[in-house]
Image: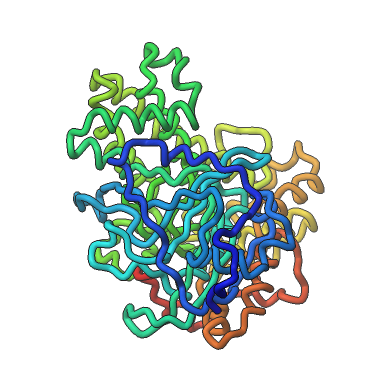
Length: 496
């Protein structure tokens, strides 16, 4: 429905707004209102994100909230705008990009800090590049579920407050319907924001942006000791550290982003822009989850190196501020070691190894090698290993392998590493590290098909499971089982 004539002119969520990004110069954005979404309806709501934002439970399901988060009713205190950025896409300079289908509403003060809100799918902007500015129900459900699933897995990510849908037709490969996702993050600033002003040699704006990020998100960069007080080098260094830690978590969890362009890289080290992502079923290091990625640039095993490449593009953009190229190089130099250390730390946690050992790199490497050779289901393997350690019974793990000879050779070395540990405590830790449930592609597809028919109960049930991915959920045990044969034929593109 549309707001009636006697509806209030503004929706009031009770927030205290700060809108710091909107205080930057006009070169950073265009002010405009969202395009109204006809006949909106609720698709999904994240109560945990609502609590994070300090929203009252009785306000979010209201008509005012429905229309506010569909772009139909202004939120009191908001300052809607679309930001401009540029970037490298699939390794090539794409020039000016920007928020082509997203409207930044503003920044609110919460008990845990400042958070920005953004409507994705809210209509055309000056940066839509000929697009309609809409998102479809299919991709909106995937982003909503994965944002909240990643948070529950402990992986830094943007959050999703809600999805609203509409019968409005949207045309991609086929006719689909429109939807809007309300996204939440401390900041949506991307590597591409810096590339935009550097490419245009707008040095004042580049410095203003860097100072803004340092002052609001990385104030310690002003007092660093490693780069002779160079705050911009320190900024590059800390973004490098956060990005290395993030991609290490992706690799350990078997998560493929699918489209790691520089405009999809968060300056805060958050997982950003859920497009053709996938959690691995069978462990295949060369897996490509984006059918538009013809060259396999963003294959699973290439993600760490692609992130490094993107960091170097950020370093190039910051070079005019950093000055000495050697200092910029030093800020980036530790990436490989930072990633390796973070990844090994993640894998030790998955194995229940709390005390580091010099042999752990080889132990992990051997494991991943035979997992890949035999295409073992990645999530099921780690869950079964956790249970096997708890019960001291490894046959269910062994049964995952067509040829268990490598596992049989590996297992004694692994068990020897567990000898000094309390086995029960180790298993408990592993159970909280290796999830039973992840957002597999076939689960997302089943949810989307039900939603297209107006059934949102599947989404609600799957969301509840993904918000507690380490628990048993006996009523939904099938969602932790092997994927059906048809899952391998699912094709995901960048279209939304």
